[in-house]
Length: 240
Image (cartoon, rainbow, N blue to C red):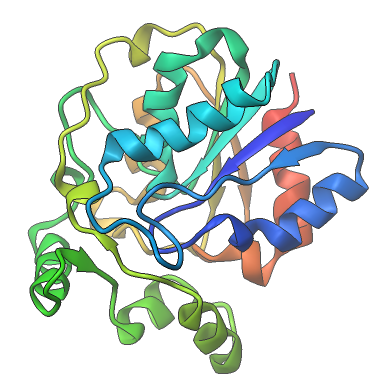
């Protein structure tokens, strides 16, 4: 299996290191690009289109075929648009507790108003248009299944990203008609997307139309707290 794993907001490609090791040990090829606007020394003016280009360049630049393209969280919005660009290179899309946008929608359009305000307040606290969730929010809603030391270690590796990545509408005129099969991998203790808005499943998963559902215990940051289990479920979600 040729896998391209796309991280979520505030992370970079190294967040997949534990999962990548397990997947490679099982004989799979794994690529973990870092999206534009993410990681150390990232461009604060990076756009959603730049993020998509990071993924398309990884796939096309390395001549990858039959790719299982996976997106986590914000990365779901990126693989949707990347799939429109290179559908002929894809074997399946896998969304891991990921946002699934409708045509013309932004990520913040899917959030309850109080969540969107947290994003905006975080960006206003900086002078470069970027934002990062407060640790108090991250600790309980993103990584509640980790001990405090692990939660602090993971948070220390996060970097602020442009708020515009969350607020820019994404045009997805062709996504719903693409013939690429889809899977949704749901970590059942993940409350980063609020249950009152439908949760990741079925709130986001059912936007895919026909899809394969794979579930496992875990939080939003299961790549850190349960890497081997997540790798096994990725194989299950990505198989033909």
